Amino acid sequence: MKRTGTIIFLKHGWLIGMVLLFFACNSKKEKASSSSYRVAVAAFSHETCTFCPGEEPGIDDWTYRGAPLKGEELLQGTKDWESNDFIQGFVQQAGQFDNMTLIGLTSPRDVFGGSSRTWNKQEVFDHFVNLMLNDLKAAMPVDGVFLALHGAMAVRGIDRPEAEIAKRFREVVGPDIPIVATFDLHGNEDQAFFEWADGSFVNKRFPHYDSYQQGERAARYIHQMMRGEYKPTKAAKQIPILTATVLQWTGQSPMMNIYERARRWENEYPGAYVNIFLGFPWADVPDVGTCVQVMTNNDQALANKIADDMSEFIWRVRQGWSEGEFLQPEAAVKQTRLAITNEKTPVILADYWDRPGDGTWTLHELIKQRVDNVLYAALTDVNALDSIWKQDLQPGAPFDMLVGGYTGEQAGSPVHINGKLIWRGSLWGYDRVAAIAFGDGNILVLTPGYQQCITPDELRFGPINPDDYDVIVLKSRVHFRRGFDETGYAPSIFIVDAPGNWFGTTRLDALKYTNIDVTTFYPFGDVKFSQ
Image (cartoon, rainbow, N blue to C red; front, top):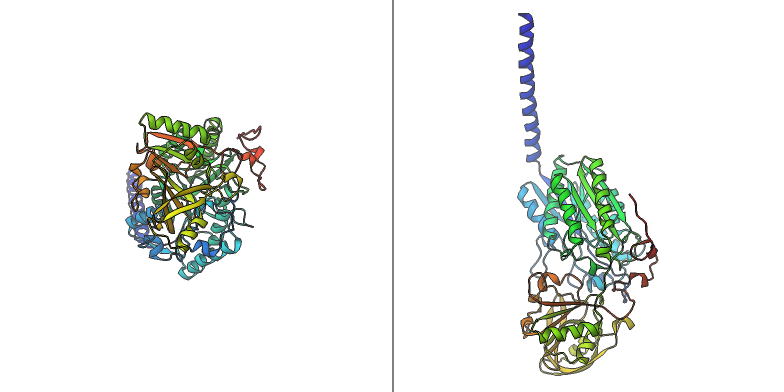
């Protein structure tokens, strides 16, 4: 009987213990769910073309489109400035939790000229990062930090700017506060960022359809970390592959297969996040090239396994996505004439190589081969715009000038355009843009900085409707596919190369890198890679 009583006591004692444990766990969950989390949000994004000509951008270039944003302006945008998709996604998802308060730190808008601008000065970098940190210090304590970055910023004297940003934030918030960032897949990143931050979320699509979703994922991730439900274990692996961005379109295999493999890992192991940086080769920085980053929930072995598998697969299929040849201007225009004859219009001619935007090889060839009804959007030429505004030319006024081809031999020679001004005004974030009619139904759009048009709607302004033209010339590598290819808008698309070994082309071994030896990267040398 005594033994039976002991058994009964043990049974009931076990049950009581389980009940107490249940209530204790639920009490912790209720406490966690009732907590209020303050998260600082900042943005500093630039895809830097260190090989591009021109002056290094100063503070004025970074404030050309307006003063830095702060608070709700950064989080929600303004009437003249839309917050980037990463931030929009993060803000939307944070709002679903009802216990995350976001603090927008002073952050610069985009630099004038975008990805056609060369090295950033360290004093400019310090200026804007210090504005953020001053706000952060004033807002302390915070429970988390979200950074909307790019990954391909290049700064004089700072090898890894994004890692440096994370480091400076870490010095303020201490070792235990989660720091998470979003990146463009063209980022040049390695292990250094993970030394200071807890997670990264990178586009898996190029064109970048998924920036909003990556922002949402970053918000869910940091929320889990603040609740103590996620302990990041991280792995990063660089792969010696260097490619031009025109080859990185995720709408074709094997690039499509690479990202599908990453998604399969994420689906098979909840809590695993797989990022692939394809790199930005026109930033002469030590960490340029391809890299895999992985985060898992307290499982270092799994993080290492995924990083090894992904890097091995990327290396195995490297030839299919890291090499390619494209039509020279003469051949591309001949193909254009044939497409017009066969009524497969509009034809898109994409000058993938032209980062400054003033390249004229394709324009010369269109005029030479007498192709009409062309919308050329757009050609960079500050001098021509200065002349239009200085003379106060109005629509209908004659226009007779040399345009384009001013950044050197690679851009080609200036083109003589004799026509008339049909529109002038502000557009695409620039205060001065002009449209010139010339020849038989042709339109040339002039901008003060590099302009990459992504959708037909961007070309609907003033008297211009892109639907009216047989040929549209764009300064774009892959982004244009979002509106002109993957929507079925253009039945004929030709990627156009430049006749020479210059920056912007796939011939990266012609560039004078100072921070890397290009022959240690595939496909520019006899490169070996092993796990």
